[in-house]
Length: 140
Image 1 (cartoon, rainbow, N blue to C red):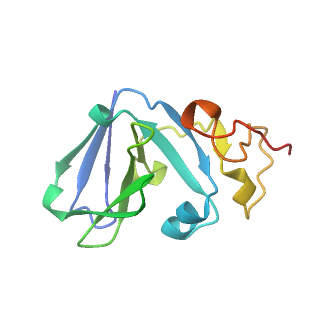
Image 2: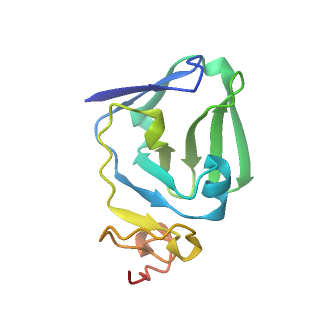
């Protein structure tokens, strides 16, 4: 299945195909600051499943850390996705692809949370162990 999305002004359009590798919420300070919200909803995809179909010339990248290459539209500033080289995955922000049914499975970086979420999902202090984190969870 394919899902279409775009930046805020529509100058950049993208397509994701197949199913995400995972979905959830990130509570780290970088994601909160970048999204201008208390939490960031993510969907993780293999790089080959993500394609900019229109407006690639308007896509710029900002990398504050080696963990995240954040992509945005140079015309409107709209956020699109973040490439995570250490994970080998691309986070296409859930709000960017409105046709995707968002089904979160976990919280990451919950030790940095500013908005408590009582939803029964696992809350990892940082990341699950297979992704380089401690694998430690935090009780609700």
